[in-house]
Amino acid sequence: MLELRPNCEFCDKDLPPDADDACICTYECTFCRDCVDNILENVCPNCGGGFEKRPIRPKTARRPNVSLAHDPASTKRKNTKYSMSEIKEFSSKAKDIPPSER
View 1 (cartoon, one colour):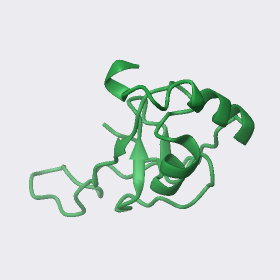
View 2 (view 1 turned 135 degrees about the horizontal axis):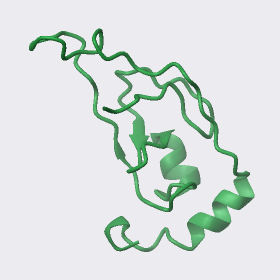
View 3 (view 1 turned 90 degrees about the horizontal axis):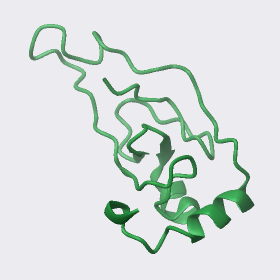
View 4 (view 1 turned 180 degrees about the vertical axis):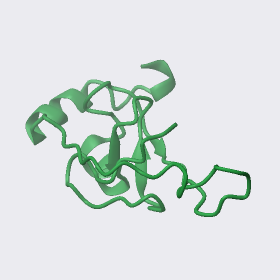
């Protein structure tokens, strides 16, 4: 079950469960699309993987106990421990390698 983390780990922008611009890596690190494209260069600063659009959990339970009401989004905010210069150095080594080949 995805946590649906509430914020971008770099700029701290709010990313509610229905955010169209929330992106996650395979470890569910969460960043906004603007940071993924313009700062991270599609390289997760934590694992080196790529990002995908985070799915949106249904608000309405169309099956019993399967909805945002039954499985709410996380409220625990996370922030990256890496500085802008550390992120730029890290992403420069992987940004030109397709995520499937990293």
